[in-house]
Amino acid sequence: MRIAIASGKGGTGKTTVAASLARMVSARREDVTYLDCDVEEPNGHLFLRPDWDEVTPVHVPVPEVDAGTCTGCGECRAICQYRAISIIKRRVLLFPELCHGCGGCVRVCPVGAIREVGREVGEVRRGMSGALHHVQGLLHVGEAMSPPVIRAARAAVTGDGVVLIDAPPGTSCPVITAIRDTDFVLLVTEPTPFGLHDLALALDMVQALGIPHAVVVNRHDTDNDTARRFCAGRGVEILTEIPDDRAVAEAYARGMLPVERFREYRTLFSILWARIMVRGAGEVVA
Amino acid sequence: MKEIVILSGKGGTGKTSLVGAFAALARGAVLADCDVDAADLHLLLQPTIRQTHLFRGGKQAAVRAPACTGCGTCLEVCRFGAVRRVAPEREGVRFVAAVDPVACEGCGVCAWFCPAEAIRFDEVVNGEWYESDTRFGTLVHARLGVAEENSGKLVSAVRNRARAIAEATGAELVLVDGSPGIGCPVIASIAGADLVLVVTEPTLSGEHDLERVLALTRHFGIRTMVCVNKADLHPEMAARIEARADRDGYAFAGTLPYDAVVTGAQKEGLTLPEYSDGAFVEGVRTLWARVLEYAHKDGTGGMGGARVASSSAS
Image (tube, rainbow over all chains, first blue to last red; front, side, top):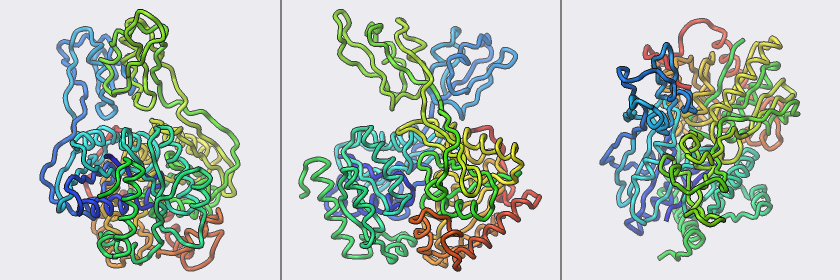
């Protein structure tokens, strides 16, 4: 069962929710993986502190041209949609950081002068934190395209255990890559105009993808029912409300999860987990 | 003309609230919201849209089912798993191909190699961008379509327009609200800018993400300042971030406390200086004065030491 935790707006508490659930659920079962797909800025390891066992580089295929064979005909430049190939005085000039790895140039070359080589754009780390499996994708600084690293991180998790995916913020290709083909998406928001505006975009996104979903409201304050009204209006269920609590924010600043510090949050996240299981998989928690 | 980009690495550090405040203090700057994935600045500035432009960031493949012979070439050549088989509505073919627009990367390889020329490969609209009037000057902003790609190109479109407006009107400042992270839209929002201000917070995540943003601006050789919001959440860490910025050669713009006034202003749809004249806003004024002074100071400080690399990535 793959559950993605996403948000639209950054800083709403995605990692707090994903890591708290991972910590709680891994105390009960052995097959839980926390999968950090926020590969531009992964943070889960700061809270879960895994021991890394394995680091695997992520490569994307990019062309390499054999200058001796190349005739400078320009077919490769013509097929490339990403402006990664240019031809100057019948010599090919490559811009590998613009390449999406579609392989079109290799196929189209009439003289077989192009082969593909791997260019490293990031890495996937695997480790354990107690009984919890931890997998993290990490984009190298200066690289623009995170989806290949997200795909590699997702591919590193096998089996049918529970996978909690910490998704990147936003609503475009990185998030889509992280949440596609998951069983359930939990959208974390905060009851502010920015939070709800971005939640609306995130809801459009999960609805376009057709994935079952529900909302967690973080930094809830009892006088403020804007999130409730918003979710009622959109017909989406709120699974839990996490109170606006300065003690939680201060613990978070120091790398501590609320489920580690405060008993009441263990109860809150247990209930949240039971609700996710019922809605996401029709499975009742043991 | 100076272009200042506000970034954060981590989301939720208060970047957009500060950009709104700076817009109010700067008066007459051209504003650009380059957080095109989840743009929020307009909620503070309530723009009146003057012009709407369609954004065409790339092409997309689409199979013309009646022309498809079910040969399977497109399935074989697509690297992105975007082509699937669907049942044909006519006799004589095993299946017809269909392209999933969300998975399609817009490479066009399927269309190029389709022997029946049954795949269209046309420009698609990925979003819109706008030129608007606000009470503090022109705002260029955008909306990326749901589940769309090419956010980097849309960021470039927004920035280019904002700069062109500044040049045409003689505005001295372009103020850019960037997106979180360090990937494609962030790189597109900082390339060639005069100054980046990173807004961080004293949390383990904030500190970790700051390091990666600083490595990015260093990689592209862009002068960078650092400020810490919500500093009293963890004062020792706020001090540590400041000390490290000093040590590594970044100008430190200041600290701001955790203050409910930020959310209060947001709920009213106001920028901070319009909403309050309390201590927090005084702090913002001081911080903004330092940023402006630094932006106009010549020199190569703020590059984060000597490791300045040039790069052609965009």
